[in-house]
Image (cartoon, rainbow, N blue to C red):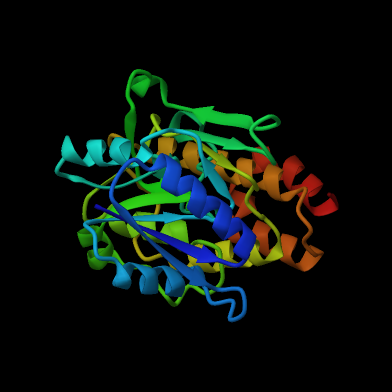
Length: 286
């Protein structure tokens, strides 16, 4: 039923997550682990190779530095698709709005944020990142347009229709781009009934910023992209400002040279947001 695809760089981590999957998935599955410790290929290339080897109807792309906490999570995932023929892919973190300005999947607006992931070195010290829009407070599955790549569970047919864009090199934006592409052929959603521990956080440094700038300059679809009701230009401007503010605050702490910081401010067109000029100055001065 499920083909689990993992891009591996550390044998010990792969062994641990493989054992964890075997004891928790609760469904027929195959594990397709691709050793990327030497070649260092981009995730888009590796994931497409893994998916092309898949023999089951559903493909689960997952990082190797995770631990599944839910028993029978495979059946839980499949149940969402059984009840919704339009559902193409699910994840554990995502947003209902992908901004036009340089940004990741997080839109900066808490009412667009959907997430249910624990982070930490172990269960004992892990903290829960949880957010769900008020309008979907009782839902276990909330539609979004962009997903985080720690865990992506997709119909094989949706992957075949969308595929990872191998022009994206490295390990950034493979998830944002792929989920946006899948959202054009079916429904993408975040589910809240599967618990996962992620042993690391995302890396937002110079390489990520350069990928974000390049992606915003040449997106695959007109941005912003969202699944919200029709919005006015004023509402969109507010959303974009929230995204600019969120990423300025996050990247302020990142290790980036001044030249990249200046490029970031130019990329988000900071002149359009006078209310954020003070934050922009702090971003430059760190």
